[in-house]
Image 1 (cartoon, one colour):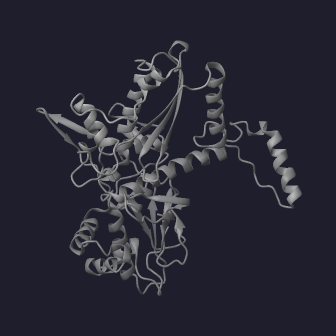
Image 2 (spheres, rainbow, N blue to C red):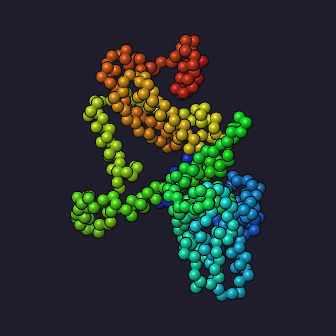
Image 3 (cartoon, rainbow, N blue to C red):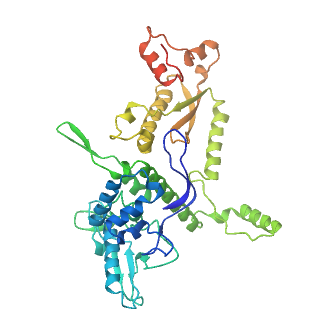
Length: 436
């Protein structure tokens, strides 16, 4: 997996940030003469040599050598892709005197039931052809050649993408998402199920647990326990989902009635003629695309319509996420920090934000509310916060100083009269030397 990655530096929690295009690529079976083996090429080496090669990588200086060695041994035993490369290496040695070209095709479709755990075997992962004129399988995704100068792209809709890019998270080679997921309907019949990429990864990131005899336990989910790699996998997953949406929009412009934007098309063509360049193909991003300019403008117009109908907002409330909330800290696994679980932070923040909205709108802690609107933003380090605008009813407008004092206070509570509120303010609102 590659992208323009922003390097983490300085203090504070770790974050993973990318810019531009994300790509997933597969190299040749053997490295070039001027290069050292990397990625899948390491599996044709013996374990000791592969470990030494990994430890020479500057990014692995702080890694434990013994653990690196044991992980290599484990992957060679249970990972079908590692076995496939080993099989190709053995076949290449057997045919070293032959003039035939050896090619390995990694298939991108599986007949297993994704609702159950199905341990794949090497024959399901790869098929090796010793004759380049042979007919390879039609549904192949990746072709591995002995030596190739260029890299080839791994499709994001291939079920091989996730296990090949993240072997630590999927050591047994479990299939990732594909556009042909099947499920068992009544235990006997296999029917096609249109599972979207987002639904599939929601399932992957889900927290599952059981309760037996009053004891609560959580199933081990490697996707949520990989620290920095978890962040990379989440960002990579988001880019794949967003890329899939953009691809669908690009290929379904007729259904979106893009031809209705005739004025925009004429403007682009006239501008191109004036600047002496050739106009490209016009792709319309509809207002249903989250984050697009039309959606942002539509949300703005909706918010302004509330002001036109109900008047100016009376309250501007900022609600921030606290990484020390007990709902977050109590659900962290041993050794984890808040930065390791952005999914948990987002879920807890959403629940608390929704409770605050209910306090304001349904329970009317400030009085009758005619309308409200809010926006959620994320800080550079990943913590979310929410800005809420509230328009109160006519009888609950803020008109006097006493009305303001009943809502807003900038004083430290008296520790004797209100010890609980004092401790909360001291813990969450004071920066610098602690109060005596």
